Length: 255
Figure 1 (cartoon, helix red, strand yellow):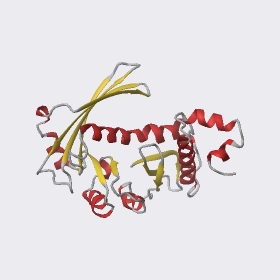
Figure 2 (cartoon, one colour; figure 1 turned 90 degrees about the vertical axis):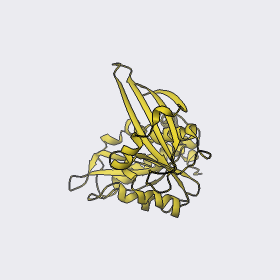
Figure 3 (cartoon, rainbow, N blue to C red; figure 1 turned 180 degrees about the vertical axis):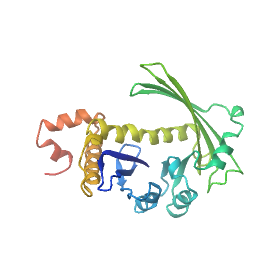
């Protein structure tokens, strides 16, 4: 789960339209809600996920959605699992995770990827923690070290990210957790980046009523429909479909 602001659209009161969405690992948006002008993403977490069958599903979310109530909701009411990134909004837990003896924990997973002009190396360590986490149902702590290098300038940045999960080590080792975290960060590439670059969403000035949300939903639908046909490059898929007026109908199953 992650949110995106439609930067070109503003309400009558001047606030921007923000749309959290739930995406599957394959890049399909299965739920989306608009955040009210006087609230934030946290308030839509539960109502957006409540209608979904999440039994045995692993839900990943960033630090904004790390209130303990969300973890309880997923595990106790939805029979789901979670991987929650922990940052400064959980200061005591964040400090506790930082102070764990990570130097004594062996490196368990390392991946490298290049995209959008950046070369990134991720190193992952996990540790079973029997006490001290103080987070509902959490049994494993996670440390992810991200080393990013901007290819054009050579600038290097280093970031340490911490997370907790209710998945025990026998059910999800470091490699499995790293894979799921990469899928979570993939929402930027699979949905947000595509809507910005291919559909020019941030340049859109559609702003009346629910129109920005509706247009975002239609973009999600187009992306999902193309992905279900095996299309990896959404821009190329759109060009292919634009050359034949019947092809979009076939893709959508309309005869």
